[in-house]
Length: 553
Image (cartoon, rainbow, N blue to C red; front, top):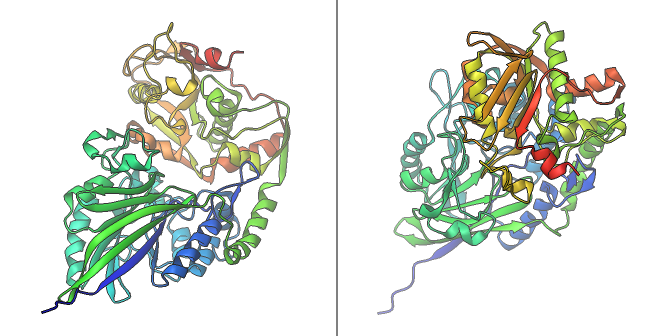
C-alpha cells in the first residue's frame, strides 16, 4: 500500500524595521546619496513578490520619526498625507507595530498617521486608563490557506523616553505577560502559525554581533548589553513564552539574519532601510491544521540595489519640499563647530553652543538655570565656517527632543555624573590605548555622554566608576548638600533615557513647546553671526587629557 505524503506549503514573510523616515536613498545631513531607504527596499520586495505573490509584509516600528522629511510632514505641513503612509500603502504592507519614536510628536500626530494607513497597527501591550487595549492586539491573516497570527508588542520602557503628555492616558504593560495572554487566544482563533512583530531589543548580544554566524552561537556565551532593565526582552520572549514560531525583531538597530532561541526563529533587518528580513516557513498539513516543519530566515541588503521607480516617484515631491526647507540659510559661522569624538573629549564649541541655546531659552521662558547639559549626538554633524543652513543644525542635532528644566539636588547631580563617566573604560595615564575607540567602555553610545556647562568638574577615568568625580563646583564653590539646582536638558535625558533614571527623581518645572533643534536654528537666525559662543562659567576637565592625547596635534 502506497501512502501519499501530506501536502506542504511554503510561506514567505518580509519585515522592515526602524525605517526612521528614510524613504529616499539620501543622507539629509551630509547631502549625499546613501545605501539605504524604503525606495531601495521596495525593489527587494518586488523581487520577492515576483517569486511568491502571497507573501506577508510587516513593519516593526520607529517609522514616522528620524529625518528632516518626517519632521517637516509631522510638524510643518500637517495637511499633506504623511509620506510614510503614502509609500507603505503603495507597497501593500499587511500590518505594522509601533516603536517608541512613534510617540515623539504626541498622540495627535500618531493618530493622524494611523488614520491614513490601509493596513492595521497591532500592539497588544499598550492599554488605556480603563485597562482595555489602545490598539488592536493581533490579526490573523489567511495566506494561501494558512492562517498566520501576528501579535504586536512594544518595549514598556517607552514611558521612560518620551514626555508624559505624549502618552497621556496610556500605560505600557509587561511584554511577557501580554504574549502569554494573547497567544492561546490566537490559537483558539485558528492561527496555524504564531508570529510576534515587536519593537524591543536584545538584553544580550554575541561577542561579535557584526558576524551573521555569531547570532547562531549559544546565547550563554553572549554578553550583556547596558540597556535599562526590562526594556529589551526579545530573548526573554523566546525563552519564557510557549508556542511562538518566529519573532520579527526591531528597536536595537542590529543586523540579525538568523538567530534560534528555544526553537524560536528571530531576525532583525538593521535600520534606515538598509536591509529586509526574509522568513521562509514550510508547513505540512496534519489533520485540519497546518504545522511548521522547517523555518529559516536571512537578510537581503540594499547595497547596489536600484530604487523602485514607483516608490521613488511617490517620494520625490516630499523629498524636494524637504530639501527646500533644510537648505534655507539662517546665519553665518566665523569658526568651525566640529562634532564627533573630537567634540566629546573636552568643552567644545559645539557643546557650548547647544548649552548656550538651552540656557538662553530657559531664561527667556522665566526659568533661569544653574547648569545645562547636552550630548554630541553623532560622529558626522558639524558646522563649518561660512553660511549656515537648517541642514547644518539638523546635522548636529538630529533628534526631535524638547528642552526641560528640572530642579535637582547635588546627590542626583553627582549620581548622574558618575553614570555619565561610565562612557569610558578605566585607564592608566601612562598606558593609554592607541585609538580613541579603545578608551570607551563596551557598548558605549555617544549620545549618552553628556557635556555640562555651568559647573566646574573633573572626571578622572583612572578611577573606577563611582569615584571618578573628583571636583564638583558651582561658581567656584563646592555645591552645598541641600542646594536646589536648576538644570536644562533634553526630554530624552529628563525622562530617564540612556539609563539616567536618577533624573526622574527631580522635579520638572518647565518644558519647551519647540524642539531644541528649532531653538538652535532660531538662536543662530537671531544672532546672525556665531563665532565661538564660549561659556566661561564652568567646564569639563578629563583626567587624563584625552583631547590632548588624541587630537592635540
